[in-house]
Structure formats: C-alpha cells, structure tokens
Length: 419
Image (cartoon, rainbow, N blue to C red):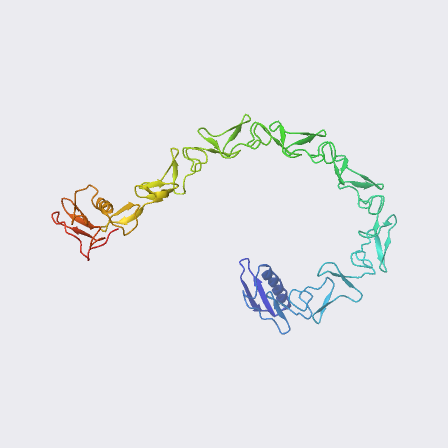
C-alpha cells in the first residue's frame, strides 16, 4: 500500500510501505494530509488494485463504509458496505439526519417503534415504551415517559410547559426569586426589567433604566423624544432634538444650551434644517444662499471666480478676455506666426479688426500699423521686423514675416495662413 504524509507546511508525498505498523502510520499520515488540504494534485497517489483514491486516500468503494459506492459517501453508523451499498444489520432501520445510524426499532429507547420516538423515563420493548415507576406516558412530540412533578416541559400535565426560566416542583411551575413575575411566557422582574417595567409589555425609552417598576432616564439625558417608547435625550445638547423634541440643527451646527449655533461667520442656508455655510468660500452658497458656482469655478470673497488667465462666463470659465453672446466662450485663433488671440468670430473670417488682433498677439507692445495695399492687408512694423496679414483680396488669410524692419511685403500664395 502507499503511505502519504502531510507536513504543517502542506508538503505531501507517497512511498511504498510493507509492514502492518507502517500501514497504520500511513493511514494516520493520510488523514493528516487530508486535513491540511493535500490532494492528488499535490502528489499523485497510486492505489492498489480494487481501490480508488479519494482526496489522496485509498478506499475500496465496494466495502469501505467511509466511501461506499462513491468517494465520501458515508454509511450510517453501525452499517456495513457490501458490494458498494450501505447495509444495516438485519432488522435494523436507519434513523436520523444523513448519514444517520442503524437502530433497532423494537428496543431502541430513542427510536422506539418509529424513528424519533423517545421513551424518556422508560424502556423500549417490542417497539413500545414502558414507563418507569412514577413516570407518566405523554404522547409525542417529546419523550413519552415523563415525571409530571418535576419536568418543566410537562409540569402537572402532559405538554404543560412552564415559562422560560421557571422550574417545576411538585407539579407546579415556579419562577426564581430573582425573576418572580411572568410576562409573555418568561420569568421576569417587573421592578427592574426595561422591557416589562411595572407591567408586562411596558418598555422603557432607550437609555433609560427600570427602578422600582418605573422608567427613569439618566440625569445627563433627562428628556424623552421619539415614537414611544422613544429615547432619553439631552435637549440642551442634542443636535437632533435641540431645545425641543424633533428640532434638528442645521448640518454643521452644534446645540448649546438648547440653541442651534453655526460656526462663527457661517450662515444657515437651505430648507430647514439647512446647512451652515461660509458665504465667502462655499461654492454652493457663494455670496448668498443657493448661489452656486460653476464646476470650474471657486468661491473667493463671496464671488465665483475662475483660475488665472480665465474669465467667468456665466457658470463656466473661459480662456480669452471676455464672453460672447449668451455667456459663451471666445474662440481661439492662430495669428499664423505662433501666437493665439481670442474673439467671438468664427474661424477663417478675416477683416481689419481680426487683423489688428492678430498683430497685437504678435507684438503686444505695438508698433506702426498701415495698410498694404490699402483696405486689403494690415502691416505692423517694429524696430526689428515687419509682419503683414491680408484679410481681403487675392491673399486673404495669408501672413508673411519680414526680418528687416524696413521690408513690409505682401504675402504670397505660399505664405502661411492665419485665423
């Protein structure tokens, strides 16, 4: 047979054994290997002829009650495995949840005549319970033979159960001295039980205690608020019940001496109870309650502002130096010489105004402007260079840069475009 071992590190291996003692050690090792999660994938197991590997352990599925007919199919306690089928001893029956146990219904006091029929204080003979002296025969469910004088489930009468926590003495139920009262089928102390204070079903408010049959909130939370039984609260300090039950402070406020107070400088905004907002910095309440800044804006000094080099257009932030109709953003245009300018005109529209904007982007400090030729192109001349933007005529949309300040030439069809 093969011998399988498992280490605490989960290593498994198999080797051939030849003595009965080593076979016992092998089985113990195999069980340890199985408990450590070792499987045939850890080390292939070769079983003798007629046996099958089940989780790395060899079983004869025709005769082994631990794996009968198939791996891990366990027979009932007391059953044997014959030809791959579980079989109880002659006359026995399988009782209990799977895999169950083989029992003799004519004599088993826990399964007398039928599975689950317990005799209790008696014996089972020929499938019938015979009660011991002093025991009474009570029908199922439950044990048949009971002592009506002391059984809390059958006190004085069959199936007359005592309250939870009570005992049965001389056939009468009695609650202990610590919980002498009965409420809803259980022994309680109505003087101290917060679920049955003074009377059954009288529940004290959350946080209260029951003393001498009366509910009392602690001194730190003297008032009761909420739907009965409610809860103990401090109306002087509870934000959800400030000054009066149900009066909730605004989000961010505290309750002091029964009055809601926002942090210094904050204002209460929104529907009651509202929120505490700093109108100088709150993007949702900037400068005034409900005045919200746009997604790209921040609130500074009570004004919605955009970042550097941006301008606020409605709730948005735009590049450029102004806003277009309907708070739209200006369009970015190229002046053809590596700089951009912004206006509300469409792309590829040229005129004297856009030519001036293109020139200003090239030489912000200015220079001498003049038309070349008149009414068709704009030239801007500086001390070192001259650039010409044509907005009409044959070379409309073309620009040329001359290195020498004295050369202000008109673009050609090969010159770069602008706008």
